[in-house]
Amino acid sequence: MERLSELKEEIRAAYDREALHTLVKDVQLVNVYSGEIVTTNIGIKNGRVVTISSSLPKSAPAAVIDGEHSYAIPGLIDAHVHIETTLLTPPALAEVIVPRGTTTMLIDPMEISNVAGLDGLLAFIEGIDRLPYRIFIEVSSRVPTAPGLETTGGALGVEETERLLDLNVAVSLGELDPAKIDTLSDEHLLKIIAAHRRGKIANGHAIGLAGKTLQAYATAGLNDDHECVTFEELQERLALGMGVMVREGSSERNVEALISGIVKHGTDTRNLMFCTDDKHTSDIRSEGHINYNVNRAIELGLEPMDAIRMATVNTAQHFRIEHLLGSISPGRYADFILTPSIDHIEPQRVFVNGEVVAEEGRLVVGVPHIDYPETLRHTVKLHHNLVDDDFTIPSSGESIRARVIDLIPGQIVNNAIEGTLNVEDGVISPDIEHDVLPMFCVERYGKNGNIGRGLIHGFGLKRGAIAGSVSHDHHNIVVVGLDKHDMRVAVESLVESQGGFVVVSDGAVEAILPLPLCGLMSEEETETVDRDLAAVRDAAHALGCSLDTPFMALSFVSLPTVPALGVTDLGLIDVANHKIVPLSLN
Image 1 (cartoon, rainbow, N blue to C red):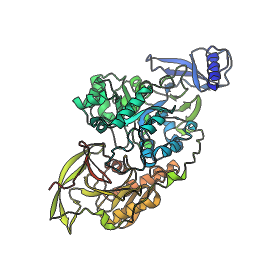
Image 2 (tube, rainbow, N blue to C red):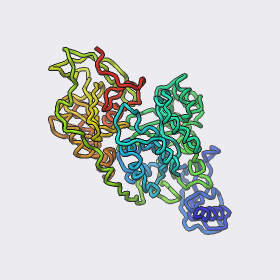
Image 3 (tube, rainbow, N blue to C red):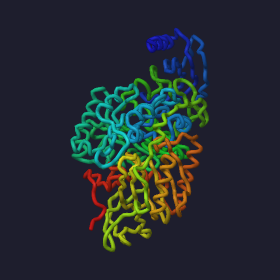
Image 4 (cartoon, rainbow, N blue to C red):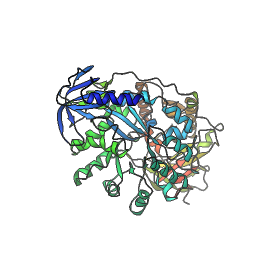
């Protein structure tokens, strides 16, 4: 009955029969419903907005904060993010995102679910209600992502998914890839039905779909997509009633192309949102978070009100949580930003539950300590000891015509190309001149010892090896390099550190970022993580890698659901046809 008592207090405060807890006076409130900007005061009780009024209350509030005629904007919402790929735990992440105006994260925790299953996920989200920002869950729909094509540490079936959907913090079924619809998978269709029965939406992952295949996907009840790369893709999805999340992560840069098309064509923005999907904290620190998406959209010509709506109320409406957040209006949580301009969002103060949680770019409240169980810190283990020859690709003859993954800078999709490589002493040789290198995916749960093999174009390494345990969505260890011994050392170093990113040259570790929590995250301070991430990036560049974010690119090349090819521990995957294919085209 506690909530009933609080609600009565809030109603009395709205009537001015009871004192407010906080009055934030003299703000220019950005009304995302009417499109107006009005000078007013914001009255807060029990962490919720109860009054928007130009007149002052009769009863003296417990606290009065001068808004100094700043613009008051609803707290920004990240519509879709895999929080694990920030490389930080939720408490540590607060210091990075909250000062930039993000007050709500809608997370699809498929990474930790694939590593540690239901128990690991429940342990991971324990205590999120004590954070100085909000987390809602998009219940992971594909754990594993590609059954039969990869080895994972955990699995979420229909029963586990329904249990998670029943949580109050669950707002949707997480992204579901087209293969599950194309194959009419009972398990995944039942998960969609389970979400809809609970009045919750189902998120999409409609990468590369068009025409009849996209319509079949929408027919299945998938409500949105965050994989649009071209404006034409965005248009087609909007026309079918799907929402579109405009993404800007570390390696997936879609804002410029999509917003430019929206501005040019005058596209209605009501069903558009912003997300990061996957973004390292160092990139958030250097350029921003959702505020970056908003600011860049405004720079590209989108009206500030439309850009702000995309980051706030549009998302809240889409996920059916508009009654809680997304606007500064009575009954909603008092989560908002004060900024001197709406043409460029630079939060001076950030409020969550009516309290100032960040000021002048700095978090000003403490974050809770969450004591994660030891089982989440010991997830990287090999089935057997490795030898250097595990990191060779055997072949016969003098040369081989082979399938090659061709990286596309700034995107997670790749091209399938052909390459002809020399074979020496029964082993495929790297082609440094044409930048075609061997890559391996090593099973890291100690279940079977599988090692998948492939070839990749686009990393640019001239020597050594780089490896990581963050590899979507199975999170086995992926390594790319020229020297078999360096690759073995890289993998063994990650086992010793219980995960992370590493650069090896001449048999020695040049730089390493340990990520011991499920092989995905660090529990260190953000400055330490950023420093170590910069060190491994610099070390990779010193080996010749030309990619801006080599480890983000590395994390996606083994994804068996993003076209055209991926390498898992079971081998080379033809994504479009959902099957393992031979490397050789001979």
